[in-house]
Image 1 (cartoon, rainbow, N blue to C red):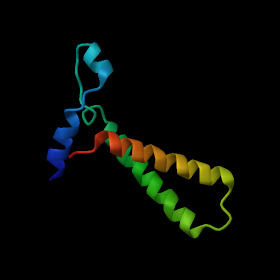
Image 2: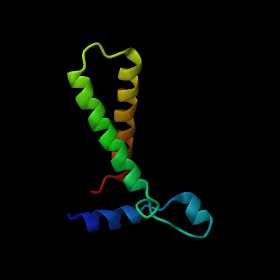
Image 3: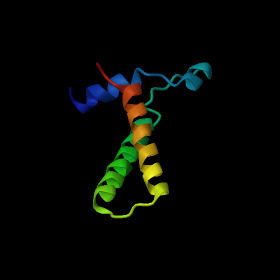
Image 4: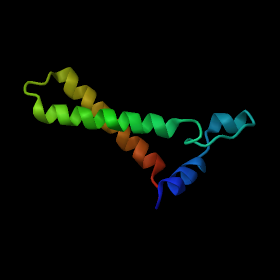
Length: 81
């Protein structure tokens, strides 16, 4: 499946607020896919740092775990069968 097909499928997922406002918009069209991609890049960087950094603080570990959890929720929400 190419990127254009994935983006088209993502735009089939409409933002409920935009629907209520009478101007339906898909999640890719709203820029949420870009936000997801940026967040994923952040998570990947955090994972790399976690593997190489010794003595990571509890707060840093919690933040990385929260980021991974967020990405998993987004992936589940936009999974294309």
